[in-house]
Image 1 (cartoon, rainbow, N blue to C red):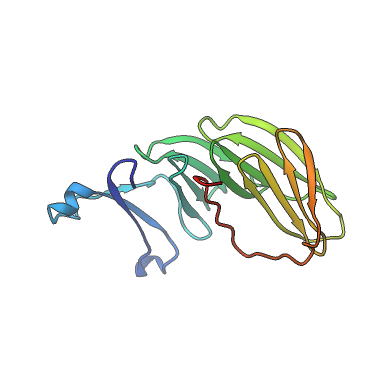
Image 2 (cartoon, one colour; image 1 turned 60 degrees about the vertical axis):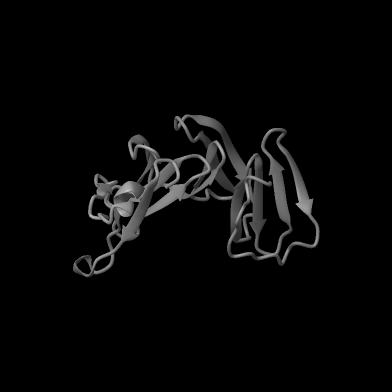
Amino acid sequence: NKANRALITVSVRHEDRFLRLRCRSIPMDAIARGQPEDSIPIFTSECLSWPGFVEFDDVNGKVLTFSANDRSYTVWDLTTYQSLYRIACRSIAEIKVSPGVMLLIYQRVGSHVPLQFVDIETGAVRHELFYLLNRSRKIEFIELFHDRLLVKQEGVNLRIVDLRTSTEQELLGSQHLTPHHFIFLYETK
């Protein structure tokens, strides 16, 4: 953790049947002194049992956790490990993070996918969108890259939506594009 000069460990234990994540922060000074036991448990108020998770976002200096108990998301400050805000909604299908913003992707409703763009610092909703889809096609992915939304449905060309102007472009010849992972290099765009 560059934000506070610490090493964060995320581990599982046999006694939890490897289903519960345990997070600790070990100051680099303690490691240098040979005393890694001087660590502190973090995110202990969360139930990080499967399917719960923790995701670190060093671009925004935030941590996102998902608590399996109440199906809520919490955003934490990466420097202090303090909870900033909680998002409690059972209909969220996925969350994507980009510099300054989070995209909340809700469960599909007929031919639309409800989307909310949330300020990463405050949790305030900046913009809402009901994105129209081809009803008979499976969604392959929805990704957020800065102010662009990438939407791909099975057998259909990739669509790129500019969220500032609400204009949409179609990438011709991309109907069979099926990446499994995205890595966005925000520093170089």
